[in-house]
Image (cartoon, rainbow, N blue to C red; front, side, top):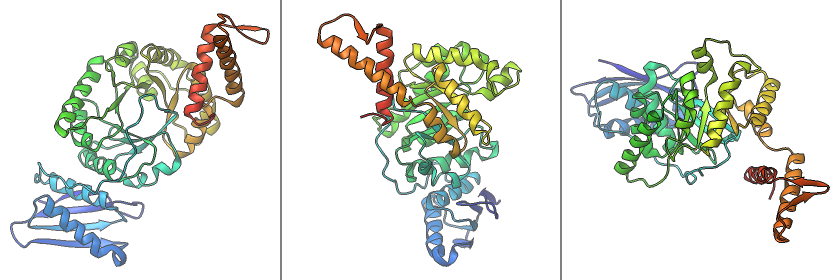
Length: 394
């Protein structure tokens, strides 16, 4: 029986296709076709051999079509093909670990999160160069059902080997119970945050939280793993506060408008009037639970002005950020979710007036001829703190 994994062809980059045939005798035979064979052929053959030996394979025929895959991809594709043959179920080949930044802060800035399909390694390598606040290695909607197993190994290896810079490293797992299999594969490589799709009940969050706690014990990990449930149905929206407060590890909740509008049976529009209730309820629930509110993605990559208007309206509604499906959306999101210079200066004036009144022991804060109420001061303090977190003020 021959099993395969990966892709090749003229439009494929940074990947490879593997055909694996286990045998009874004959040792390991490798047939390699690679566009970079004159430069890296010997090293690639050596790695292929090492991966098979690590997985306990002594006799096999392996046919490889390479499209410039890096070692972490080579290992993941071969391991997937071997495991699809029913072998090496308890073994793994892991790449050398890269140096990653420390775990992300609970309240870090999350203006943009860039989705990367978990089955396509060509998007992983340079993702950090685009400067998103976070990258999402997606195992759910962007991955074909037949590629779930192979993508899980690819994402595991990417978490271990790819330097995503200062980006928060997020994995969107599949719906439960398949999502628990995803967690078992990736937690040891310490992603910062787990994105939970189609969440409708607090108990779903708690199940994931408990699974992560057990995996932390198994792998002797002490760091925090944050959670961000995605609400994608009417039921999820109605349970928004219970979901947002289901675990102290929830740091944000977000909405998936494509699934939400499909659940309602309505058309998703550029104005968002059909989802205004849901988005407003999510924002209110998030702030009541003291977590961040993150908006859905903007699906029309070519409509940058539409994205700008949406983000500005989103921020006015109380959202802290948005999902991005293309690097060109990141800069627009960062600008729209950041306070303007005029807003910053006004807030700084209010904070300065408040601090002066505190220093003088005054219970009333005034700015010029206007009295400043405590809620206005609190809003100004939050805006200044957010501007500092974004590096807009010292």
